[in-house]
Amino acid sequence: MTFNPLKEKGIPLEKQLRNWHQIVANPYKKQKVDCYTRTRQILMNGIEVEGWGFKHQFNRFMSDIDCKDRANVSRLGRIENQQQMTCNWLCPEDQSVLETTLGYEQVAVDLTAWLAQNEPDKYVKETFDFGLLEDFDHLYRYAQFAYMREGIEPDDIVQEQTYVIVGRPTQHHHNCNGLRLRNHYDKKTASPQTKVNILTVLSGEQQTHNFYAEHGFMYGDHILRETYAEIKDVEEEHVTMYESLIDPSETMFEKLLLHEFTEVCNYYTCLEDEVDEEIKKYWEIFLDIELGHLQVATEIFKKYEKREPEEVIGTEIVIPCRFKSQKAYVQKILEKEVNKRLAPDGKYYNSIEEIPSDWASYPVQERVAEISAPSENCINIVEFYHDRDIVAADENLKNKEATLLEKGLQKKAVAENTVMPDELKNMIKNHEKRKEEKEKII
Ligand SMILES: [Fe+2]
Ligand SMILES: [Fe+2]
Ligand SMILES: [Fe+2]
Ligand SMILES: [Fe+2]
Picture 1 (tube, protein in one colour):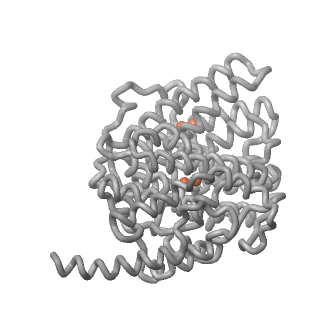
Picture 2 (spheres, protein in one colour; picture 1 turned 45 degrees about the horizontal axis):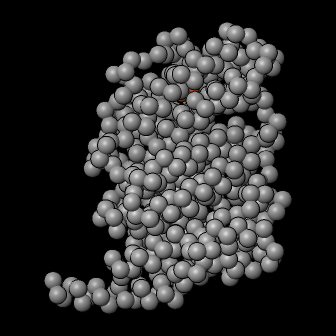
């Protein structure tokens, strides 16, 4: 049996206001939480932030709307705001900023990998694969600081579900804005799955940006602060990239409908997958709330656009956020595409050799890293702590690390403080040698 959200009534809007006790839920225990419960919690916060912000944009930009409808859009925004608090504040006070950060990048890696494999549009899939390898490298860079500052091993957070190792080097993620812009889908022919997939990952990336903006300064370590600044800037590029896939001619009514449909689909998936019985109750209530929102959005859409919502969102639920381990898929894309880069007109260079010497991203990369690349410094300093970088991967992938780095590094616009493949090889060799010596001493 398929689930058609348009046929469900959900909780009516006038019954959706919750009290403070209901809004502020009991946080999960960071020592016990399943890593994919945490990724759902992080993603749904991002989805709600986007849902809330959109209602304000709607009422700021739209004229010729009845007062009653404007008030209802505003009511929707207030409910999104309440849901956002519940989702975000499930995070416990003793989960450090760096621990939460590893959670954010695990969301990006495993969500984007799922979306890429469930994306009917080949071009959109290619863009997901491209973004995937950048967030994959962010996870690796932050994992160095988590170890150095807080003694956290990557698997304490990612629980052996996600590899942590070098990806496309972060210093090469900085691009000319014009190159970040991809080609958009056609709203008349794109499938609802494509539309929901893009809005889902976009919401996640936007919230990741916001989290780094609001938390990167909470550490005194200057190199860590600079790393947050550097990666935050990449998340800004990711917002630019994913939003550019959306057909800009979609109307605000169409967008309202798509936002509510996306929320429905995400909560539906969370409810199906959740292993924490307490948190599952929230996904259930929030799915009903969103079905109520979809009813309101549908009425507004029909009234002003004089067409049927099925034209935009179809008649079936879609699954946008099935969190599960994506190690094999990520490794496949990593080995194949670590050297891929953005080309003009929404195209890609499939290898570093294809990049022309006047590539528009070179001056951007040279400018931001003219003193040094913070994301490289973290590897330089972790050598003092551990003899080599912190990684979490199978032996097979670990053995390929220096080769992956060699393939992913550009020849031009390489920061002065870059850890080169030979240096990495030496670190690894030294680590092995010293490991034996250290063991003997103990
Ligand atoms: Fe919501
Ligand atoms: Fe990231
Ligand atoms: Fe990202
Ligand atoms: Fe909603």
